[in-house]
Image (cartoon, rainbow, N blue to C red; front, side):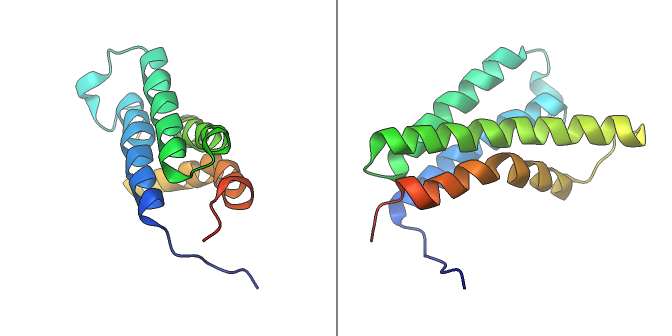
Length: 125
């Protein structure tokens, strides 16, 4: 059976940085927060990449492994949310979707990076 470990303080801080820099830009770009829809996607990708690298470096003492797993997680979550919203919009021909639904895109997109962090980059406690 899988063993669940409690998050360390470093991992909690990294999670906060990741949420603020990966999930919020994706939600802004897809129109859930229309105040900044005029900004090009490259800016949002750059923010998500920088935030996920910072989050990966904060989360573990193994900096290179943290950067790689953080980048994979952060950009995966960003593009997972974008992909889910676009597929959902095209499939159902409606631009209405529930706020909780974007979590599915974030889990599918960020899952591989989270798994990589857990098996490769996490500090042994």
